[in-house]
Amino acid sequence: MGIDFSTIKERLLQEFETVFNHKNNLSFTFAPGRVNIIGEHTDYNGGNVFPVAIDIGSFLVLSPRSDKQVRAYSMNFPEEGICTLSIDAKEDASGWAKYLVGIIRAFQVEKNIHFEHGFDILLFGNIPDGAGLSSSASVCVSLAYAFDSLFHCQLDKIELVKIAQKAEHLVGVNCGIMDQFASAMGKKDHGILLDCNTLDYTYVPLNLGKYTLVIMDSKKQRQLQDSKYNERRAECEKAVEYLQKEIAIKTLGELTEEQFEQYKHNIPDPILLKRAKHAVTENQRTLKALACLEKNDIEHLGILLNESHYSLRDDYEVTGMELDSLTDIARNYTGVLGSRMTGAGFGGCCIALVPSDTVEDFITHVQKNYHLNAEFYQVMVEDGVRHF
Ligand code: GLA
Image (cartoon, rainbow, N blue to C red; front, top):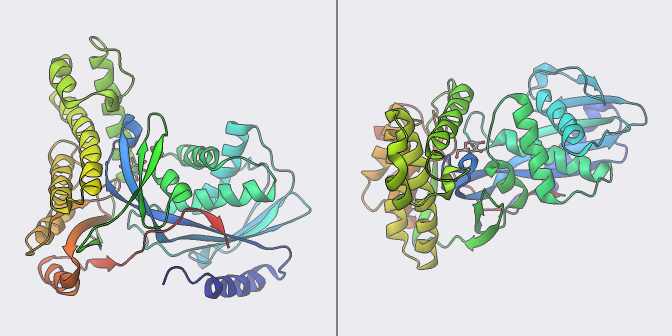
């Protein structure tokens, strides 16, 4: 099992030759998507997250050119054809190429690195569209990693993570660092406990005993996701400003639940209060989840997943009817320990902890009771970005 790199390589090579008419000095890069187990909307709040990298993601083929031209093609959007730009990335691009421009610019603004020559590049992604499993982060991480090698930048992976995050900011989503970190730093069969304040991280074996983590795609089109995301982030920053009247913190992630109770009277707006409450409690839940895994207490991990979802539903308000209904249906199945949305919310995927011997029947149960055509993904927990 795992990723069949040799078959994929053959297919990409053929496609590259067809599109660009040569196969000079090709290099191949893969960067995975991610599933976040717990710790949602905590990354940009300086809190903890616990994602895993998965065995679907973005595959790149890159070939250097001697001139300053960039020619880019995505197998996922053949109708867009070959997009042509110049290596200084002064002009804007649309579609997937905006991430390419974002990465070239991020190398410039973050590291003052200006690429000296162009390249031909082909992209193939196998993360389902709109699933919220970080396809854009995997595109950005694969690009950053491939360019680091091609242009001999010798940046370490964490610097590449920051470049990938910067590219998303330049594209317009003020995201945290979790997705890019998971895609670059993932480890097979392990979750990553990441403190987003310090970027300290530990790998924790993902031993779920008799349970399987099932990924369910709600098939809800994500609407207004980016603007709502940026709005939540701004709300949390405002809440911090209020709290700073009495306590010297920079982020909500620095507060324990007890401290939050003590100082929350400084936040006059009930909406901001709810947002901050989620960020603080979710951060603590993430640490509790780790303790559960270490003690092999999967039952309690399930309870924490449910609590996380309720907090995202009631206090952070990023779930919506589909994600609520899908997780309710999952919880109603005998033996399921817990279920929650994963990722930014407003659509995309949910996860559920299901007894391994009833997964097939569980899927039938959800399909029967959920009003949209949910899809189920069986993924493996994988290593982060690499050449192949
Ligand atoms: C998106 C962002 C991440 C993180 C999650 C919510 O995936 O890209 O940085 O904030 O939402 O936890």
